[in-house]
Image (cartoon, rainbow over all chains, first blue to last red; front, side, top):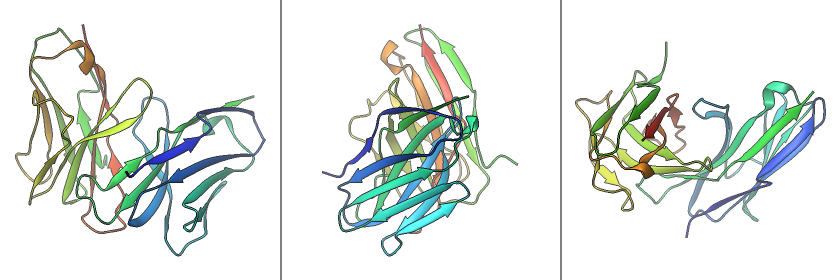
Length: 114
Length: 113
């Protein structure tokens, strides 16, 4: 069964600190993996996308890694800001399914305190 | 310009009513989706639709029906609303290519009382 599991479920850090969010998946055949950021009351917005051959991808203070062998990904946030408070959702796309082809994790709720 | 827009943003209605949520995308995408986000923030796909086919998640009650007047619109019609339908509904669109990205609307918060 295609699944995407994220950890931790929630995380509180102080402003300026770094943090790492985890994503494990069983989706196959694998096409790509995205990290989305969802602010409260808004729709998800894509941060990074990685295909099978990519190990790391950065977008400003966000750095995503992918290990396609172990089917694990992480999202590292550097020097956190209050505006980073949001839900971070890992989404894996497969090549086989026609129903949306996108498998969502349940998200990690990040809260950054001043 | 908003890429994917939904209306209304908030909808409060009584049990048993019929309501529609509208979605429009100006990205020229081929495929549109409806997702339901429950109280635990989990996004679950309801429908996937392009000009070729409509794919329905089998767990979605038949009280829910997508209606697409044209390629840029996919509206969600809900009959006989129930308390459990209360959630945030997101419309999204994407291209039909393999490394596609889904662009989401801002969501419609539906409250059934």
